[in-house]
Length: 75
Image (cartoon, rainbow, N blue to C red; front, side, top):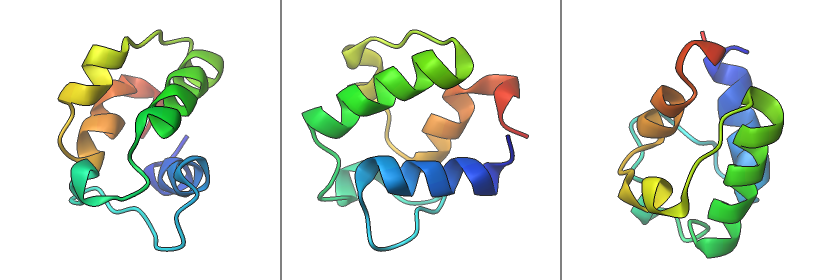
């Protein structure tokens, strides 16, 4: 998966009208809440086979941290 594809997927998961950019702060997104975090946990598990704990997601600061969390699954 490319970064662009991932950012588009993230935008859909968060139900944002604005695009997601790597340099964006997650806490600046009003859509960044417990429901979207749960949806992301399910997405990472289904798409990448990566299980993430809610504490890990809450510790992330930027969209680029989400990209990094996927590791080599995103090019």
